[in-house]
Image (tube, rainbow, N blue to C red; front, side, top):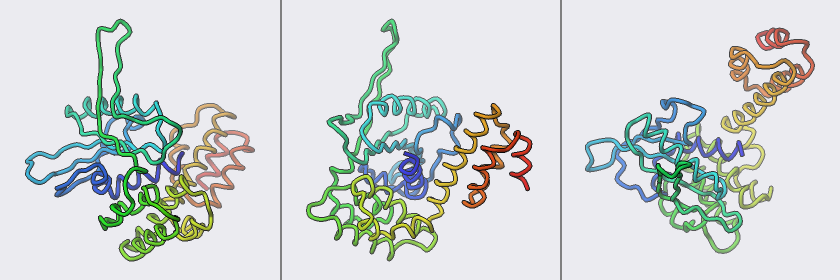
Length: 279
């Protein structure tokens, strides 16, 4: 799920205010993402936003979790992440979960409770859940907010998808800055594939060429290669020194990473890999 996860996190970081609007938040005067500032980065939520609302003197924290499908593991994850934010900030955040696509009969209700083994302690959490497929696509398009547009293919609409995807493409072409256009089209394709894995439909959003051009997709591909290389090295030589991992993660060129995948599988030792890596 790397492409869905990273696409979602990119939208939170760059268009988080529009995700809050999907949850019914209005009156946002300013906002900024805080995820990078949290401690314990491996356990951080998908997004943590600091939001200044009209009529309120203090900024509010909004924790955002995005789930590709309904999953029981999400219940424990939201409880854990809410507790993490509270411990780190000493403030209980508002919590919003977006579920992108239905799967089976499971529905996320927005409530979870954990009880200690002897029953002496109980930890309970409730939060807001938005199921994308229940939102009218027409309403999302009418909002005329660029950050909402990538979610439109997952929303509810009657009839064939082509007219909706054409509207989505038109909005992105007209409203997106040159720096964001390829990423927005690529993210929209990633989400559209959850519902329609049809190359002809995806071509309406730029198809494979946009996926090649998107810096976000290039980063996703590079990170996948990084993980493959580090697994090769760890399996052959044991723990990989942090400085080698850091130097590897700075490389995004596909040709270089292809060569490093092969070298990770054939190099005689970690020092030889380090030498090739820094050459």
